[in-house]
Length: 339
Ligand code: TRP
Image (tube, rainbow, N blue to C red; front, side, top):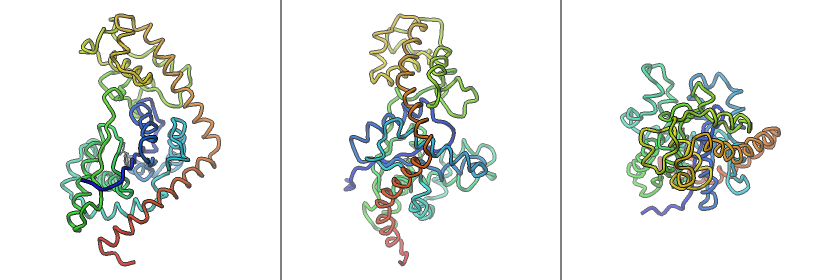
């Protein structure tokens, strides 16, 4: 049994604009967790450099860092209660990542499916940073001895790696329970938001069709239009979940409705089962606008004052460092660094 205090840590990369999938799959849950356990929410700008030619677009990283910060706050993360910070301002992440690079095995990283997907056929041309990305992620978590990590299904393997690294560190250095075994908090299937153009694909910021996703910065009109244009089939909504068989678009829209309304897909079908999509889409458009447009408005308001965002990040980094610094100091002693 672990003796570590419960602490939540999660993070998002400052890449393109955030979308409904990020909100329902992550942010909405973060806001809830904030009242259940102490949390830390990070903007992982160091990870952003592993994107193809990421470092060539410094302005994009800067802009996206502020945008993601604004999205956290606009969605309801309260910076007065929960530190919000960008990773690069807490040097301890990088320090622990180096130590963990010496703990993790090549064989472990070779098994990471995300690296295989991202590097494609040209592994030898990928950056070493992309390869060791999950090691930095383990450091993000363990530098605070975080115990709970809300992540999407696609990050589960990285979380397992973090657990393996923690365990090997503890074993190799003979320090039982020094680092905890962080638990993934996987958000349910209802929050796996799919593309509005193809119910078999995840909603993604890299999809070439902007109609496939609702961006957190979309205007009310754009949101409503995208929902009305969303792909469906000609049949009415099914009466129950069994009727989703072979109808991924119907399932996705109902799941989105349920998540936004804080109810279950069954309850939504209780109301709309047997009705036409045109009617349901009107209701969904209204609900989505009611939930998302205020976030977009608040993001715009926050982004108008860059200095204030930067101050929030600096303040968050200071609080984060206060937790990380003693843990890194202890870690350095454990591995034999003098000082
Ligand atoms: N790899 C995560 C993603 O792409 C982002 C991330 C980096 C993260 N460090 C983290 C998530 C630490 C949780 C905890 O979604």
